[in-house]
Image 1 (tube, rainbow, N blue to C red):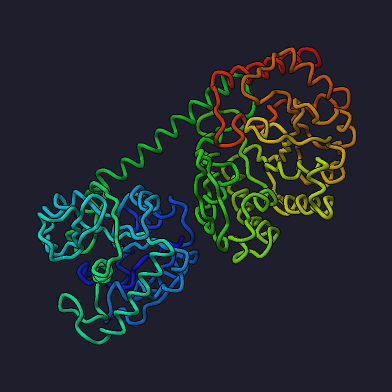
Image 2 (cartoon, rainbow, N blue to C red; image 1 turned 45 degrees about the vertical axis):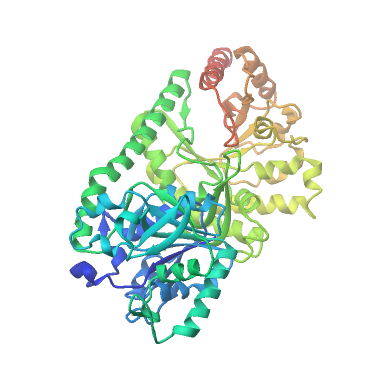
Length: 577
């Protein structure tokens, strides 16, 4: 489902604010109105937005290259309805349309998406309280909605305020069927009224969007509504602009700061927990990320994001990648450096893993014909972040690649025409990602069973032996390898690895309810020491403690596991020096 943002007009009532820029560029709370709109739509995991522009469209094209554009060349003589139909070619799968001069919460879009109706309008039920301060934009200008329950009975500016259930905020959602009916009704009316006065004394070409909505209602096509109680603003006049900035600066920015502070406090807590447990190298637990794979959608545009019924997020590439907010992960590193004097680790997903998990043959092929095309496109996005992580002071950057390690399983290998060529491809992308990087230790995390066990999925079997030639090609300093799970391979494989690899030995189970004692951890490590010198061994858990966003993690249990790992390290240092 595509978002369509309608921003063709100049917005002359904002006067000097639009002399040299589009109306949606007016800054509110330190950000352009358009950025607020994009954020609200982006949080709902919709596809790449269509921006319908007119006045200074080239300026928007240059500043937002990740958007797709439709041009209304007659923007000076037409209105919102004509602008919407400039994007008709993108309506086939359904769409969400939004005015470009409004601020609203993402939640109202979510409710519209969840409603079963084919045509859903977003309506502010607290609209009259906002008009109390709007002398330049009186109530009779509002696009008012009369309703019974969630069924829209009428939509018009001329409704008496007392009859109105609320004001249409300029956001609507149409399913594929609803979009088809809108297009059919538009062309039917256009054929009858083009060049003639149609509604409210306006020629058809200057009709508002609500005029077509009213026409559809008159012909038995039902509309439904979802509501927001305030938390919506239209910026139409200089007065609106001043009111919006006063409200945003007084409430919304503080709210965002409060959310950021809560997360900062949570990460500071988990840092302290790791310090108390005795760890030498810390992470932030990736608590700021919805998904260790889907975090790529924080770094690049081009993804559609949603949630499964159990709450787990999903991410699919649907458009060409473009940088979104480089430095998202580097900010994690900077915060860690400020909170601890110990060494810090930050993880990146590997390019091939992203290709395996986030590319869909139907939804992604229009942007990237093959999984490998998409995986290659991820390399420069990840490389940029890796360089920023180095600048931010990360001591260790770990590239997570459980996909590579699945190729130990005979059943998985059988799915590929040439599994060794697949492993070579995966390794080549990692090497391309890290080539020439200096000043940071580089690791690859190889996980085969631990995450699957925690999520209750099928486990994979097979030892590391088939991967040894490919692992030895990796241009990294450190391999993190899982060894607590049955079937994870015998320790003698360490003798076949390049001697300059440091080995992060997975010696602590991440399975809920299983707490390895210090004695058990020591015994696990000593098996590896038969094949590895002590100065090449680092202790770590098999995987993250919450592999899979639906995992339920007992923080006290995690603390006990980490404490036991640290105690085992202390005993091993005493024993071996």
